Image 1 (cartoon, one colour):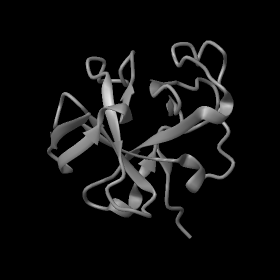
Image 2 (image 1 turned 180 degrees about the vertical axis):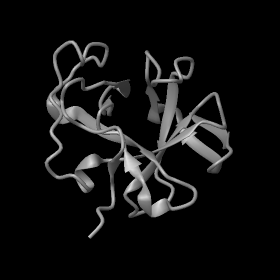
Image 3 (image 1 turned 30 degrees about the vertical axis):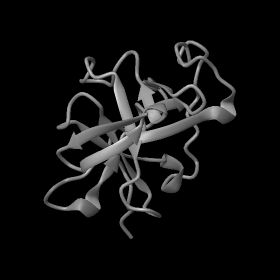
Image 4 (image 1 turned 135 degrees about the vertical axis):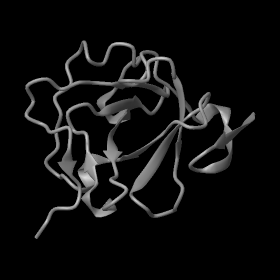
Length: 145
């Protein structure tokens, strides 16, 4: 079954219902929005959009943090994974929410302290806060040389 979303940032999206990701607890700052779709706008691009199903204004730029920080290894406790119906560690997808400054997009940062963890098999997601892990909420994606 196909669902149509009119996203403010991405335009008209036709998505299959089986591609929905459910965040039962919402995402920090957006507790009401529970259902999202992961959209790859440009093939081969490392960035994705996590578009809210009910709010056409709400979409997060996200990416796999291993693309720019190969040593990123968040320790996920058993209680962190509750609600994901899990999971075999191989079924977990970890994404970081990006902040892209309008005045200088090359200074984009990623929130590594509160990654999105998604069970790719069940399509359940959760944002996990990694207290005391030493990760930054504004980790530069592009390192200055």
